[in-house]
Amino acid sequence: MTSLRGWHPLAVDSALAAVVALMLAATVLVTPQAGALDLAAVLVGSLSLIAWRRAPLVPLVVGTVSMLVFSVHAQPGPPAAFPVLMAVFAAVWAGHRLLPALASVVFLGVSLATNLATATGQSPKDIVQGTTLLLGWFLASGVTATVIRHRQAYLEQVEQRAAEAERTREEVARRRAGEERLRIARELHDSLTHSISVIKVQAGVAVHLARKRGEDVPGALLAIQEASGDAMRELRATLEVLRDTGDPDGSGDPDGSGAQDSRLDRLDDLVDRARSTGLAATVTISGVRHELPAEVDRAAYRIVQEALTNVSRHAGGAAASVRVDFGGDELVVQVDDDGLASRDAPPVPGVGLLGMRERVTALGGRLRAEPRPEGGFTVRAELPLGEPT
Image (cartoon, rainbow, N blue to C red; front, side, top):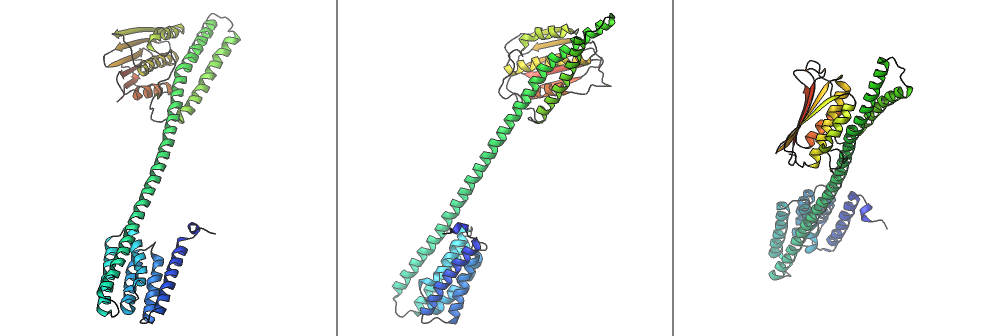
């Protein structure tokens, strides 16, 4: 058998109105005082219930007036209240309060007054008791509609909260995945590109010296130089894909993971590797050296690493100076070179500088990366040692 849930609401409402109309039409036929006017009033009041779902005030007004006509003229008793009861329920369920209460008072008051004025076979006490019972049914109709309305609102709120929770979980998962891709991109760039750059620079120096001495350049050396350049280009393309699909706001390293050797206590090894490529580099450390938060320690190391890599690749044989200042509230890392950069022709920021800025911003710090007034380039990062703001 087909469930009512599968029916169209209009069909259900029409069937309900038809059933009420048939019941009241039968009441008209067995009521001695009833006539054609009463039958018309019953049909109009009952069929107006078709609109109870879409326009609940229409059956409330039409049904109350029509059933008052039937009740006052034919005095059929409680059956005349059926359409009004249903209309009151529909109006309260739709959120109306004053009009359903007014319709109930008018219908019950007029019916009671008419019955008391014209009754011959009933005592006034019986008439009042019957009206009181009807009043209880009207109150029950209104209370039931209110309870159903509140329950429906509660269920809708629960569904909305569930949908919001699901959407929030999906957003958190996407954000975490983006943060992880961004972290991977930064770590790959800061570690692999540095190593590959050292290989490329050393191969280039060897090729240059061999040609300067008039010696034949070994094919393996040329292959290393060419392969390292290709590897750099392919790695950068891969990192751009990771960065473009990652978190656009540079929210940082969410889990605090990273290479164990990416710390300032390995700074000397880092500078030695840079010197092995022919870069003249000095290191100055000021302040009282102390334990740093892991994120700050790693970010400082990566900033120096990227800055030295950029000097080796772009500064044309320039010298670099690395300064690390251990302060009480912040760590300052600065790398200067005396290369060819100038304020009139500043270099175009690449992936490395973007990664630096993301690291510093994620820690609540400040980064300055720009040409120096006297020539060359400076990178200065101020990293707070407390929680990011």
